[in-house]
Length: 538
Image (cartoon, rainbow, N blue to C red; front, side, top):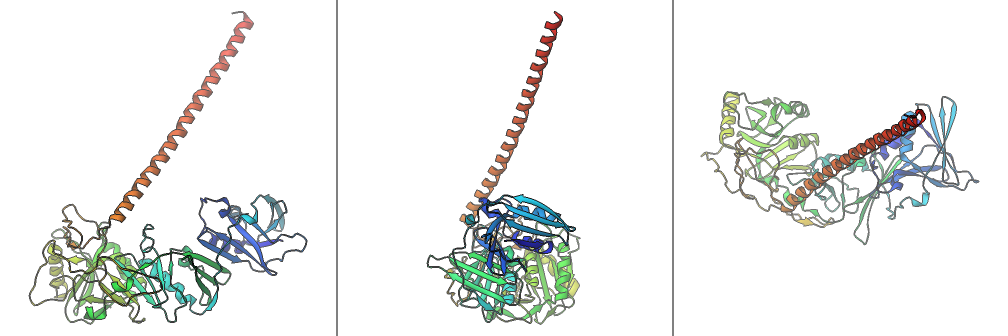
């Protein structure tokens, strides 16, 4: 069989393969692509990392001849990359497998043929995909992939927290959800394309738009052993993914009800969201990423939420086109990165909670009412609140008496280390196939954002934390997570020490070789001098 690949096709294929293949493979066969005659008129190239399998159907392949008897063979992906880097636009690459397992490559360069033989492994060593997923036509594949890309930004980047690092496709409630413990995003799909719930781990293939298509084939499989698989076929690509096995946190109990929100909401148009994104670096610092959103009938602004030195102008951005239909001034503070992610995902309508310790609720202005984003707020108090009130009074002739809640009749200041009125600090777990309908406040923000000055008072879990910069939040102390973090640090230090030892060992070997070379040189010259002395009788 001959496989002819134009340069453009080769580069497109390798671009997809690079999303699941790593430079360092524990098994040599994982660095190879399997070329297989899948049907009389089609050839597919397949790669795998054992958890993910990606196949590409080559356009217009040459059918296998009846005499060679070879219907599949392996070829190193690294060699394919070498060809892709050197081939020009109109060049082609032809692969011809031999019975001795070598592959003859023929490159057509400017009408000339260049031959090369490449050694490879037996095709039988390629890991077989043991689970067969039944595919069904899906008219909402594009909506499902778009929802995944919008939701994945709310997941945790910590790979040690496997469930919070994944996206949950909840077929029971028709939702695609993701959370990192401090925020949550949820999109409702109707109809939902999957018949079973799956927990989808991070996937570069699903995130980068390689499978971007409005329609295609989609299927999932749950085995008796408790394993879950997801398979997507779109265009020339076929992708199968091993999903996580286990229970996803009960995300629905973390969503506050509409009745827990104040009357009125703040809508930030797309143009204002883009302006805010461009100006955000001027509003926050590397150590303090929180911003405060001030909304009143007189105007809306996003401003720095920390305590400033006297006489320093507070960085702020007025949102002239933002719409606030509430009656009382409101101030709410939260992580600026969470706000930008929510706006990028289309959640531009902010609803403020009536309880200052409840999470705020964001929804799309013109989207489904079932789509929701939940963000745990920070509290602004002390000198920072006094400075913001003074600034807002001078700028808009309106100032909130406290953070989050509207202006009360009798102003009260929360005391340091005041116990926060949060409910359950942890999320219950649920079976992927079932999700309870009860709702509860979101869990408190985890420690780590924003940074806390040395003068900050750090109480135990479940109490307020008052920092010198005026931001108050509740850290979620997780001893298991602390242990994992410490182990990762020790592992990194050990790896760094090992690399240094290898470097020192190599230097020692170089020194040893240098002195051995010098010794041989001295011995050679000594022998030469001795011969010379003997010859002249000296």
